[in-house]
Image (cartoon, rainbow, N blue to C red; front, side, top):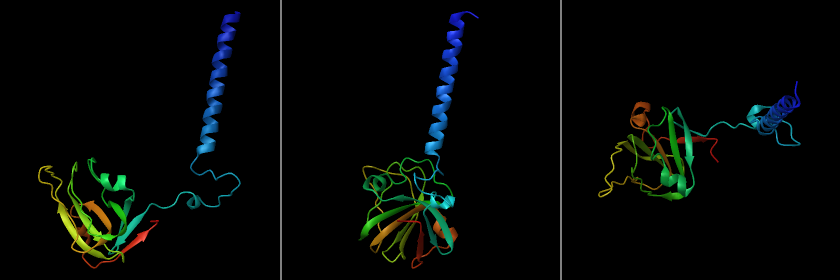
Length: 173
């Protein structure tokens, strides 16, 4: 073999070895089940906690949490849909009569309002997704609420969720 070809093979082989080493190092150091340095993992649930959920009247709903002002402002806006048996839980620091509206919504929803005792204080069913910026419609509970749960339209009715039901929060900090 000529020396140019040998150098080419050496460069290609070295590059592949380096890329492979970097890939292995990356996968090892960032694997989701890798324990922090100096600790031992005896169970995968120590690292991967269950997703947050809300249980009302025997129905468990996996939820996304909206706790920051940016997440609250965005809500479900811009999404094409929401998976069945899923929702978004808005968490406020204190009970109040928070106003919700539907700009940039693409599907109707149910809104369940919960007080500080996790009790359903109001339900807005089949809230339409149409939005008129010149005449916005606001939705608010009759009583102060600390938590607001948005679900696909019809969810409350088909699951028998009613005012005075109590919610149980799972894995919600």
